[in-house]
Length: 326
Image 1: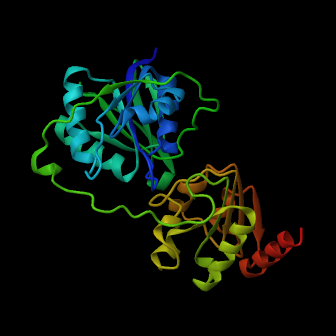
Image 2: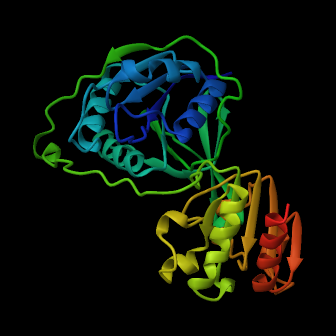
Image 3: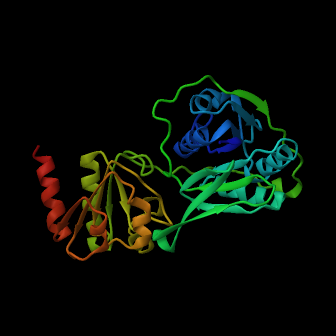
């Protein structure tokens, strides 16, 4: 048995020129929805024609698009438009990625429908024609399953990197239909006057195949430079534990963990990270984990494929030296 229809909220990137592209999280949700539902519909706050081919290739048969929302916060118009659309043709569920916009739209839609939201979802299961969300609790120590019992569509906020995107996406461009936006009154009065895109070098932390992350064991902000140097040599993205983000060594965009980013690279190198549960939640899905820590009892070694018990200030320079010599 499968679910009849699932709608997927489409998060878009913000390039400096032209329209946005669907984010990797959106493509993951489309792939999972295609496994679970007979029909998958993508919801776009913007130009549907510009992304119809990509969304169709990843499983959407139809795109509901509001049209241009430039200069507007997406939450108020999209939530209002979705609430009206649901009143006449409700899906079984709506999936949102746990992004800033995804959370905003989902929360506003929850209020309009007087329906709950299941958050922090890491898996979705079909059971008797309905969707069940799987969520980690107690810092990821165990999982619980939750399902909706009301007659409103299930609203699920899914953690990034919970699913893999379609390995070989194929399919025709999705058909595009208008998603009318009603008058939202004062809630739609806010205007976006500027968008700041943080400048980065190398691969993004979200999509990197190799991540080198540093923690409190690096000693101080200056010594974190060794993590940056190794990442650059490996074509990797630098990451960090919450402790050094809170200490101001690196920006929040570097943070890996329950309150940061969830990553699933091919290789994750943890340098001077003890392995608090909150950090493990964000990286334990990596294919290969290499841990460097002078404490042989550090929790990080419980998930590591290769553990190096040693002083990170001696190990990293030797590793950098060896790579440079190749």
